[in-house]
Length: 530
Ligand code: IDC
Image (cartoon, rainbow, N blue to C red):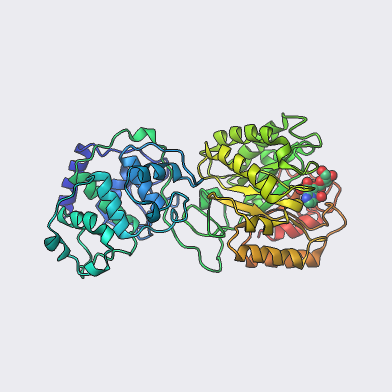
């Protein structure tokens, strides 16, 4: 059997199925922690990963038994066939390639709508086979209906629209069915099975791989439906990889829910020293896995002093070097309408998205706190849609955070009129001395209705940033965030003389954060990260 597989391998290479390599771990490695030489799929998985068709994970695993999603499977085939991305409706990372596949007739609209609602769901076996056959064998398929259908024990489960392609696949030996002779048409396909199918097709049809260089590779990850009650994990970029939003959960690259716990800087125009690598590392050493860089637009910020962008960029680079996720925060505040500086915002986010499109740890927060006479549906949402499309032109899948009216408290407005894009979360901000049960209830309702929420700014003080430390209410909020798996950043990582500041005045954490440098706020916030 091995020998046959080796032969197939030789044929595959000779056929020109040499594909683009992924930059992820796995492609050049000798083996995977969860793929043994005795596994039936060993040779195929090794070969497919060597060729960069499906890569492994940074933790050394391949996850052969995880289900492959529609987006992952179809984009692999698109790249194999050298298809180029097309203008897409959805902001999902795979949308441009999947649009091309849809336009080519590999599948129908309802099977996988370009709006993206099925992209991150496991692909059904009957649809996977149909797409494979369309991609490799085209139309005009001939086979003997009686002969092929007799091979499939659960033929009555197969939907009529897949007769042609599935029966043809049986005739050509691409599909064999399980040990009971069943095809399980509506079942899912594991990564190992997807490798096998694709390899067989490459071999059988002597695939012309086309110009695979034209399409950028996005790491292929398995889909794991998040548990109902998320069991979040922590850790930085090396542990969780590129983040994505599944349902209401922020998830790591492998689909496991993640909770980011960290800090926000104060205004970068006032506290640039808190972006140094040493200061950031001091926070990481205390358990923070995310840092938000608050680049004010007003009050001497970016609009008046564009060079503050350099402070932000060096902070982001330092955070990534410390294995922390970094949030690029367009910190609107004194002018609460994001439309006021939309042109500057577009240029800024285009530059940031181009610069960080390949960084796994960057998150974009496009409007800190809209406020004043500003409406979700008429101002913020249209602003967000424009900025999201600017970002997506470069970075197809980075997580984007969107604020809402009343200093990012009106998430109910956003929940009632959501943005049609992937990997978007909605921010809700609170200050323990000002916001209580009513805002927790609002978050609960919004999340319950399916809205993904990220607490990108919160404080132990009142909403002025001062007024004392509200310990009891802070505890309620921390319990609430833990129960609901909410990611958060605490205002603020600086030593200003105000109660929300996490450090005592005059602190210098360049050699690490000592206990005596933590303010009352800092003690609570960093304790929560342990
Ligand atoms: C506050 C700072 C304070 C500064 C003020 C105005 O703590 O030192 O003088 O901004 O620039 C927010 C804002 C955040 C505020 C914070 C506390 O996003 O910029 O910082 N807050 O008022 N929203 C709610 C509270």
